[in-house]
Each structure stands twice: as structure tokens, then as C-alpha cells.
Image 1 (cartoon, rainbow, N blue to C red):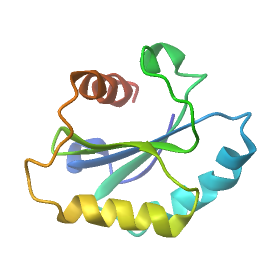
Image 2 (cartoon, rainbow, N blue to C red):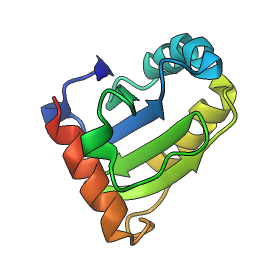
Image 3 (cartoon, helix red, strand yellow):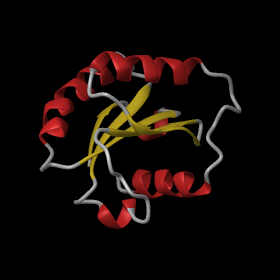
Length: 121
């Protein structure tokens, strides 16, 4: 797991990109992901290799790359794959920052996944 931007303790916005090192699209997307992170210093962006962190990701299946998990104020707001373009990521993060409270995805499995991944470091 690689983190960019501000430390978790100062951030209420947490964006994890779940990818795999063997995936060419993921390798190409990583630099774009890190570039977008610089536009949102109030958020913490982390890169998670699903094979290196398989125990933490299990039992959630990640079938498409890149897959993002966005958590705002401890609530999962988004979980899914996106097109590997920086503009798409930037719009998604901005929309989640502007969304009113209470628009979280009510999925206990995703909340547990976010907790396991955040505990990694």
C-alpha cells in the first residue's frame, strides 16, 4: 500500500485505488492517480495492490481495474470501477466532497473492507 497526500488523522476523505501490479492499465493509471491526489490535499489517496493485500481485500471480489473505494467521514460513498482517466477520478472525488451527508452506500461489507484497508497503514 502506498499513500499520497495528507495523513489519515487529518483527513476525513479517503480514496483507495484497488489494482494489481500485473495489470498494465493499473501501472499506467498509477501516475495519473497520484497526480489527481495533488489537487485534493484535504484527502488521503492510497494505492492498494489487491494481491499483496489479498487477506485484507477478501471476501470482496475486485474484477475490473481500476476499482475505487471512496470513504467520507467514515462512510463509504463509492465503490466500483472507473475509466482510467484523471478527469474521471477528479470529477468523482469532487462530487463526493460536495455531496451532502447521508448519501453513503449502506453496505456493511464495504464498510468493513474500508476499515481493514485503512488499518494497513
